[in-house]
Image (cartoon, rainbow, N blue to C red; front, side):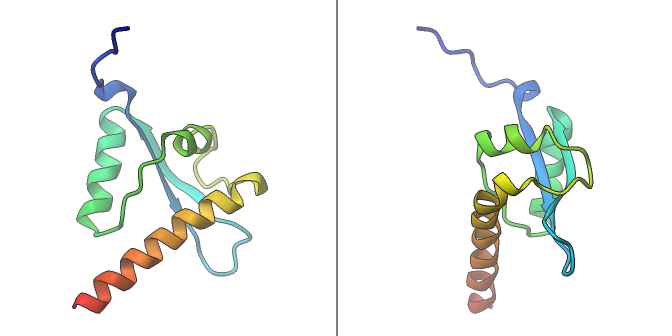
Length: 95
């Protein structure tokens, strides 16, 4: 079976954010293709850890900008935030 080579137009990304006092994290940016690449590049420039999870991106990309994540995704998104906090701690301990 032939696999299609990776296509930039197929790449998707979603940026999440959470502010104290909000009920749940929300979608802050999303895009595909060049926009997805720009979101990832900006995150890396800001030293924000990037986690790849195509299935989660597929679900999150259906939400609108500033829309809070649905309750069904709380657990999986909590794992993403735990990953980010862990990476921040590791970086801080090396400094």
